Length: 76
Image (cartoon, rainbow, N blue to C red; front, side, top):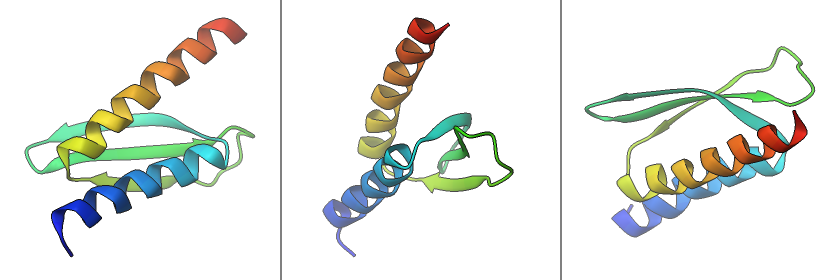
């Protein structure tokens, strides 16, 4: 898979779960990338884990985290 397609696939995975009303609950970075844990907003027990390797997808994730934080501040 080309680098471009890898970036698109990682972004697509993140966007799919966000559109399904999952929220980003844990972010852990290491030298090989980033590990995410996403939980559904309905507080059910399902947990999704993703490994994000590309810098472009991590930047996209950072923007989504900022939006999530702002949304939670407004709701509180």
